Image (cartoon, rainbow, N blue to C red; front, side):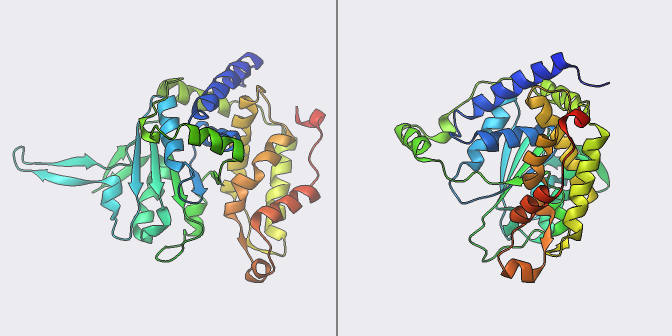
Length: 323
């Protein structure tokens, strides 16, 4: 069943209230907040490549408070083990039975801080739960409670003692973006509230977890015209045939682009996707899935710049076709 215009209006109103709520603690970062909620309502995960102290933890806490959810923060280190994330099975001498002790991944919003500092084995402990929504320990499956989103961070500057995320794991993240430093006006407002610690700020809840799940279901029902699917297919194919690219966007990337475009369309009060939704999300959804040729990277080519060129060279359908 396709979303109705009335449902799109309601969706947009709730989405705007969620964004405004989080903006109370993350000043001047409307676009990043909108991307974060788009990822949450698209049932995906977010990778933040950013400098320390830009508000990544505050973002995760603010999102969870806005939806009455739980949040945990996992500090990834070289000695972190997979069981430290998923949980372990322990033998209870009193009952004579094995009992599963849940790990920090069993939360609505999981902040995986500096994910590239842990070993590949530990990083891979997140793959199953990110893709399938459950954890398997000792042959027993334990589902996580929806809504569920992993917000992972990595430092773009300090690379000593880090493990590069493999392409297969990067592909599991719905979007990749950065918060960045606030502008001058936002910095002044932050400094005016320096007497209050960020962890002391508690935001009022806007919706319940059940409403988040319902909004995700509604977003999936947004209409996508065949011309939009054709446009996405041509964009993805262009990333694969570009001479500067060694590995183009995957089919999962194309699906992610359509899925997030549906959510963004509803957030903008529309029950159908338009080409501008695709253009706005192409860089955060596809850039981290591209592997550039080493010579192209040496010449200064970036994934974001390449996608910008692909968007310029790939003609979109007209608005009349897409509606």
